[in-house]
Length: 100
Image 1: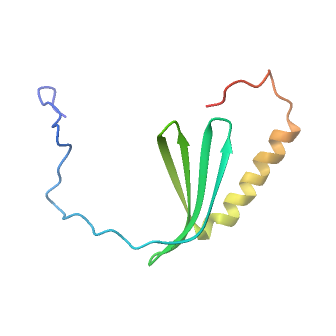
Image 2 (image 1 turned 90 degrees about the vertical axis):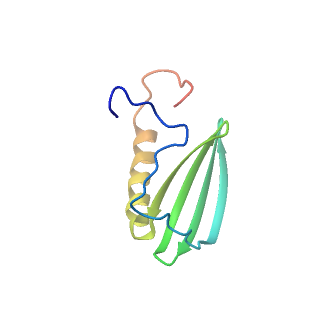
């Protein structure tokens, strides 16, 4: 943005491409877990491009989402298993506090 420009109250508009139509997604399985003040929703979905896992974190109404293609789920699980193992093996440096 040039220094004398002001942001538009209507957001950035792009005239180069029309908006894409929504893609039909089918929910195959969904589970919710509450950990401290956070709620995580794991949803296995499928659309014409393939299957994927959507992980949504909700903290006080603020949501963040990551999407993992099904082709990466096994690698994701292996890495998560390694992190759980490390968390159990490495002693904490101090008393647990409110995590991020």
